Amino acid sequence: MSKANKREYFRIGLKIPLSAQLKIVGINNILVDTKYARIFVTDISAGGLRVHSKLDLPLNIDLLLEFMFSLFHSELKVLGTIVRKSVISSSMYEYGIRFSLDENQHTLLMGHLNLLSIRLRQSNIISSCSFCSEEEMKQFYSAK
Image (tube, rainbow, N blue to C red):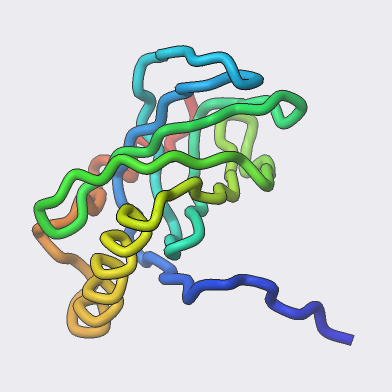
C-alpha cells in the first residue's frame, strides 16, 4: 500500500537550489534575534520549504525561524517551524519547514511560486531569483 501524499500545496523541486538565509527569531515562545546563516532551498511550496543547512538544530524545542530569499527581485521574509529533520552528512542536515504565513504573505508567495513554476519549465536559472552559483554549491557542500 502506498503512502498518500498529504501535502496541501503543489511543490516545486529545484534542480539548482535557491541561496537563502535563516535565523532563529523565537525559542519556546520567547523572542530572540540571532545572526543569519546560509541555507539552500531544495524545494518550495506555499506551505513550506525543504532546506539544506550546516546548522544542527534541535527538534525537541519550539523554534520559530525566519527565512529570507529572493524571488523575481522581491526579497521575501517568511516565518516557519521545523517539521522534519534528517542527516545528510556529518556536517549537513535537511529540514522540512512549515510556513506560518498571514493571508497577505500567502497570496504574495503563491503568485511568486506560480510564476516560478512557469519560468522553470522554460529555463533552469532565472536571474531575478537567488539561485546558487556552481561555486557557492561547491563551497557549501564541501566537507568542513
